[in-house]
Amino acid sequence: MAYVYVKNKDDTLDIVQEVAYRSFKKIDTLKKPEYFKTWLIKITISCAIDCLRKNKKVVQLKPEYEEIISSDVEDIPLSLSLHQLLDELNENEKSIVILKFYEGYSFKEIAELLNIPLGTSKSILYRALDKLRKQAKGADICE
Image 1 (cartoon, rainbow, N blue to C red):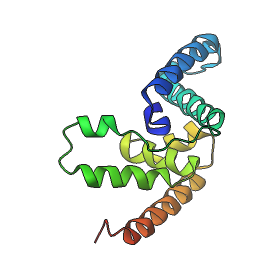
Image 2: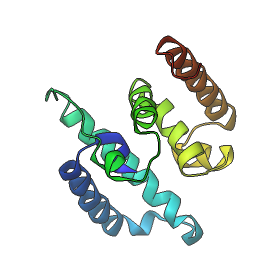
Image 3: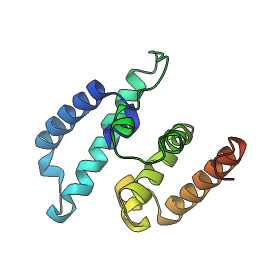
Image 4: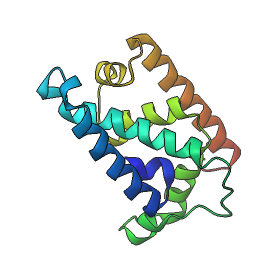
């Protein structure tokens, strides 16, 4: 999950370490043990966003897509294009799209995870999907 945000192995490892630290430090704030995974994902998203804000001054020439290229993806250009399109979304939109389609969470779970109303999670997702469709049409990906 962290790699999707930072696209850098070293930063991802730093985030994982920070998530472990924060989760051990704040384990007493976990009210329901059955939501442990959701709680960790929330911490991960928070740490990833913090890392992005901290590194915002760093300009990267070209993002690395090692994970995609080394995987068994049949259509690498399409996969790269989808990741580039996701990068155009704001943090909330990206989080909801990833949680819904990559992680398989329901709208209710997403709303709880991100501390937003259920209707807001739906409207953000549909707005993000609309942006992705428009960007994809502009790039001739979905035609």
